[in-house]
Image (cartoon, rainbow, N blue to C red; front, side, top):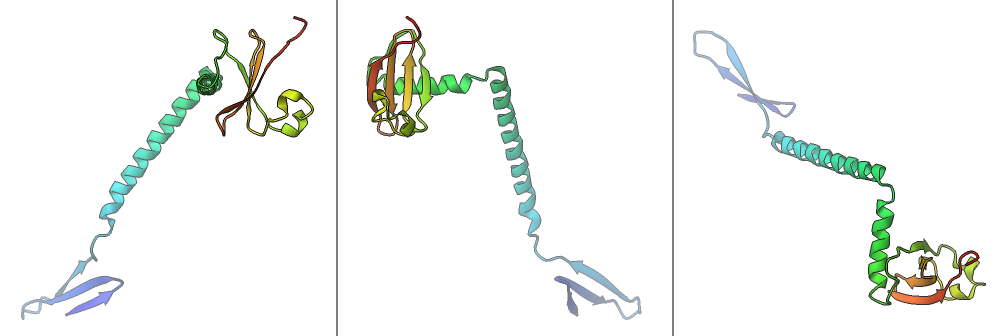
Length: 148
């Protein structure tokens, strides 16, 4: 005879006629937990890997905080150099147009829009306004810095 108690099957077995009583055997339902351990191991390894990666990135940035800026500038210069010959031997100062309305009174920024990049070459005395969305040079102009 078998009874169902809390998703467990309890089987009563009658022993021989000698009156030894009954034994109860407990059977568990099919194991659904067999996939749990590999999933937990995968999550632990993934979390550890991500923690290590971000720790390394933070350590590199702590040593050299301008690394990301230099990398972004190098990518920008590489893109723009496909469109125009840029001054050699000089790394530009890069700025992003955040509010073009404040710049509209300056002729150089008349066509500027939010997100445009401004490259300033101090030694070459050149300013370049670049639209990264359309991959176009918007404006190029000479600049004068200080009393030179």
